[in-house]
Amino acid sequence: MGAHEFDDRPCLLERSALQKLLDVLRSRGYTTVGPQIEHGVIVYDELHRIEELPIGWTDVQEGGSYRLERRNDDALFAYNVGPHSWKRFLSPPLRLLWRARKTEDGFEFVVDEEPPPRYALIGVRACELHAIQQLDAIYMGGPVADRDYQRRREALFIVAVNCGKAGNTCFCASLGTGPGVGSGYDIALTELLDGEQRFVAVAGSVRGVEALAEIPHRPATDADMARAEEIVAETARHMGRHMETAGMKELLYRNLDHPHWDVVAQRCLTCGACTMVCPTCFCFTVEDATGLSGQVAERWRRSDSCFTLAFSFISSGSVRTSAKARYRQWLTHKLASWQDQFGTIGCVGCGRCITWCPVGIDITAEVAALRAEESGPLRPEPVAA
Image (cartoon, rainbow, N blue to C red; front, side, top):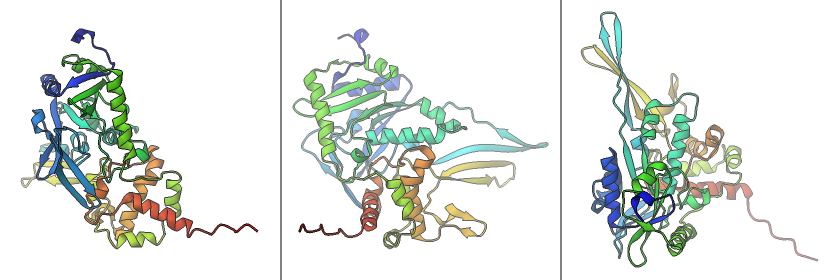
């Protein structure tokens, strides 16, 4: 099929076509960003060649544990997620809000009108795509939109990848956020590894159709599509964790003073690692700075965490001084009050908070423990007369 005949039906790409995809996106002014190995973990950074991908590597994750292992093939996307999330490309952890320069009449604000960066994100998983959509609601869903986020988001190109491997700390299947990607991508790929390595590709936007039209491809057969669907279904069946969401908000609100929070607090280091790796946590603080000459003043926005004492500091001190109060705040906001604010759970089941917690606190286990303790011991069935 020629490029001019391409439509949005699934097509099949050879491995070499992925390099062509990177080249096409870069020729259109995008900075291509994707997964690669750095210091023993998979991170997201600028990507020029497919050889920079974690070819033949997979990750093994448990609570408080992460390591990479070699596979017996040359899979490009046979890992789950590392400590990085895509939010740093949409909402940078440190951002200048405004700068003012002193004049004879007061202060003059200096407006930054530089165009936003145009990122093409390569290898976005289903859970991460849901996380980006949650950030959309946070930064653009209210009466006042975050202009910087909005400009970055509108310039974004997303190449999503369906998961072909279930992580030990993943629980996206129980939240309906994966492992198969839904809407919101420009191109979605499924890596087929049985026999010749190839990819089923589906365009999800006009931009995706136009990009694929410049790449060598052929129509996907029914067998190709069936295999792609089976890969996603098999991944869902082997999910490492599960979270029961029915009545979860009410469960957490009923148990704000439950003694189980003290048990969690004995382990929690209040380091905030869970909030730093979370793809949806969005808390920040604002800092003002003045140059030594007194001629320039700046206001910066910096990522923050609800686990720090300073985060809830008011004139009389910090509102949440204990580890118990801070962990409870994070979990109940993520799974309960987030629903009141944005109409959804603030968790996408990526499992990062479990893997990168130094003591391996498991958010799914904590919710399950509250359910079990509220239910109490099982009562014996009555014996029939």
